[in-house]
Image (tube, helix red, strand yellow):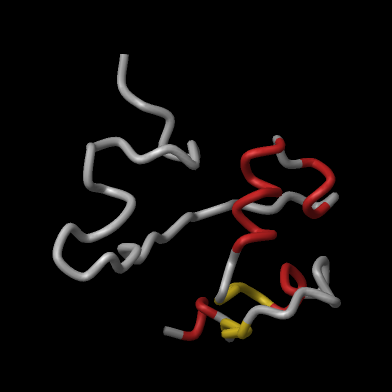
Length: 81
């Protein structure tokens, strides 16, 4: 069985910290919000949003987490690309 990608545990022995520098590797989580926002997400999805350092999404999605302190990168209308 493959490991849960939302699990906070590392998948490999040294995946949490770089063996030479001790740095934590960057990680990207893609979380899809429905019309109800974060309350409709499973706990793992809400936890990923809570830990986020950068939130990327449409203004409608970002408005669901107005007090989050992460940097925000609002997306414009992707239909115009």
